[in-house]
Length: 192
Image 1 (spheres, rainbow, N blue to C red):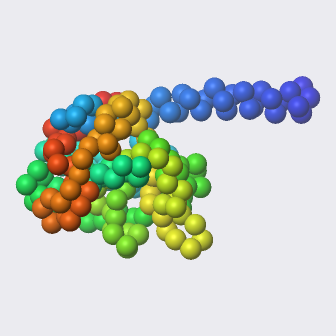
Image 2: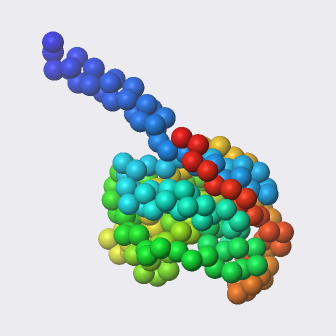
Image 3: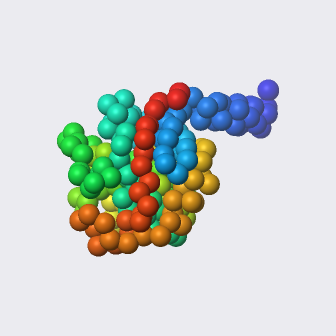
């Protein structure tokens, strides 16, 4: 067998295996008052982040929380507050894996799921956001830690787009960007 044929066969096997790996990715269904959103997450690219997120799903942490920060042409954020703006208790923060996930191809692009955090890169707990456009400025660089991307929307992007277009204003402790009509995550369940 020539080297070129061997390389071609290896490439073909990789291409066939690639989609199979994505099919094995865990999926979570968010049932919301605006419709259903299904995300798949990648433990092979951001293992600690995915483990953390899935534990919150299993603990039913997201049930009854709202998308409390919605910015059209940027992202929708949720997973931390109840409709009355009580912040839900969380576990200690997860280690930041932004650079590692980025190095494995995960970027803050439209439809990608990432961890929300404060200015401290190691402060992410339960809150997440879904990018509604390509936000390369959130990716890790030599000068910034960026935000850890760990999954993507595989169903219900129309619901994400509906949420991002909702009128927003002040609400609870937030001076802006809160949907005027609450979008509640009624349940988050592992579907695969």
